[in-house]
Image (cartoon, rainbow, N blue to C red; front, side):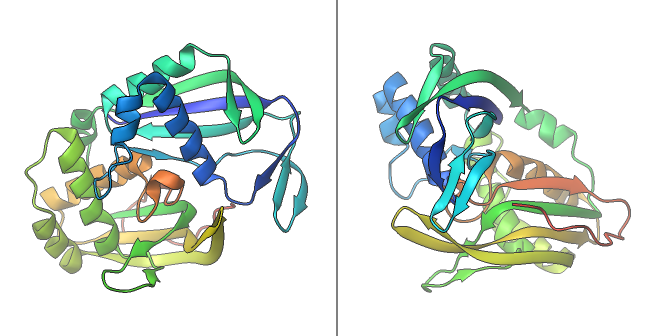
Length: 273
């Protein structure tokens, strides 16, 4: 069952943080899981295997802004979300968090003020799907898609790069597999397209590593309806738990799904980062 744990935290002092904190959120989660169950945490490091979790960067108010990052204002709470595609892993993380009143981020302690739990069974997500005609994805953090055989990444939210990958994750973790991503991809290429977008790109530093990603929004329109259109609705909802694209476990590819009326997406303001 896809589950999100949203933590509200209060820092004990002002803390310098980099401009992008997704990899810090991931380190926090993996450290918590390692303390709770080292074996489970070790399995999350296995190479070339889809990971059953994603994270968001830290959301916080800053006092100062510099070229290297920000100074977190400890007088205001910050938030971070951990998302899980596996119910057992979500329970392990929640149990670990409920046994403590603070967590260590970088070199400072943050008090756990609250934990909000959101979950949606795969069955409900599938049963509640509608034959999508128009919708929008808001890319709230930098997003990119890997190009096989190329050192460069794709920086445009084409549906064929988003939805077949989501179906592969769905098949692996939902226990409701059997749908063919190649058949779905063929339907997408003939029936689903970008109708409007407002995106921009930026370079992100993750310690010594760097990546370029796009953020903003893209609207999509579908033709033909039917079961594949309903599946696309479910996949767009699922993306809110899984993230999309490369480095989704490090805070990249955080999205929000917005259904649109009819087939007239119109314009919208760009999402603030």
